[in-house]
Image 1 (cartoon, one colour):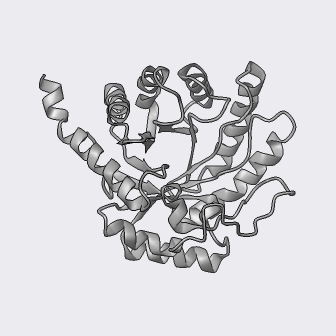
Image 2 (cartoon, rainbow, N blue to C red):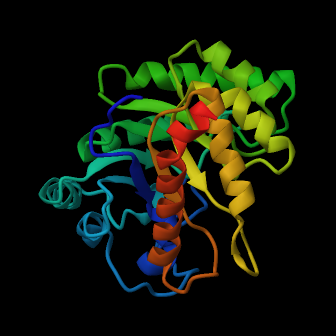
Length: 286
């Protein structure tokens, strides 16, 4: 197993969307406003405070949703970088939350907009920039269009120190067939962020086993019911990652109203994965 700089766990700001409150809808669509909105309430903390809060909970990696950046000004970016450095938190991924490289009418506009985020990701010190591969139906035409534009985007990122990754997400990538087809066409120029929660059970389990061997990072999202975390589902997803040989970091994605304090859900998932990883030697000898 590889030894990872800054440990095995990251947290996405999506997991803290109630705590952080305001969002800014950065978008290639000129009709959308980036004025702050509060769909999850006013929030109780600022993004700049998150690195220290992570370290206090034993996590040293962070992923930031683009809509959680309150400013794209150089001064703010420098301030956030200083906060990350002071807490020894690695900026794992900038998550660019809009755009559609598969759209027949706006794909070119959207990837040109995505390309502008490369410099922002680099200034933030992000290792990776996750973009949306596409939202259209998985026809050959739409998949081919997405592959062409993502290849172009990867070319724009060359030399920046930022690696472009995509996710098994939205209508374009409903199964490992389309996901693997796209990755094959991208020929290693674009990486994979595998998400445990984007596909539906039970088909998702074999799907994860089929793609997670190609993943560089993982959104370890858990499902919750009325009684709490769905332990059977979460364990099966982790088993599929293990089966595929995945040994990268796990980004803790908590997206449930079950815990009023989002940190409680995040730390529950962290403990669950830690227990799973601790039991790995016993599984190998069983």
